[in-house]
Length: 345
Image 1 (cartoon, rainbow, N blue to C red):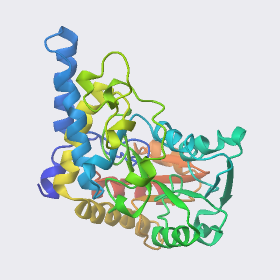
Image 2: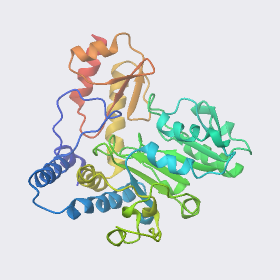
Image 3: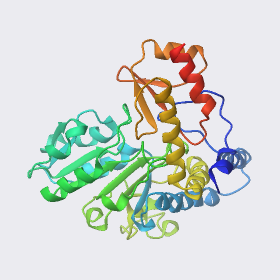
């Protein structure tokens, strides 16, 4: 499917520039979700068909981030997945993270303070230089939520490897528009409800087999079993041999909506989406007389921006006292020009 065909599957009201808060579903996802809800309402079917959507979503996500399916765990939220990693590191582990990073990545590590886990912070732009030999884990976002700044991942990974530290990357604001290769990191986590166009309550974790062997499956239930349908009752513990051992039992309808959305992105290709999104972001910056950037998320300081955009029917966000606008494959040039006109007139 090409970009134009994909864009035809959306019907946003004009002026939606806030995908960094939540993404909009393609008609394929909306239709399949409504059908499942109608089945639920009337009790027409058993649940197994809804559950199969999780496997479809796992397959499509693996394609998006160049991962093997057996390395992909499904969950509900970034913090829920990171918490399993944080709870499994040894006492006294030293974690380094950007001081301005989103708390869903930071809080799980900070919550381990009672057993001596130390969290150090540094500005995101200087993270690589702050990695010292005593650092055990480097946790950072590929794209910063508030500013849209894209991390110098290559520099951070190189410095972490030199120090013998593991890397845990939050790609929530990246997967779906920015080319991402999960194989570069020890762990990559991403929430699905933004750039992946999925319902809230969907998230993924990609881990290496080596890191995964050290993670305690503290949230394991029947769905994490080697044979979920043979794991309903009783001991012994019989978990999946791959990343499914860390799976959380799926919220069915969230995954019914996620599968077609992720399949659409995988079909179109992230490179095409990236070029469209960054092109619109730079059209916006140019309209404000600012230099172009490399992100689909733009942070600008314009007095009264939120009120001026709201009066024009444009929906964006304010983060850190600055206007945050974000552009995805359903955004139009008219949306961009509407926002520019509101901010410059």
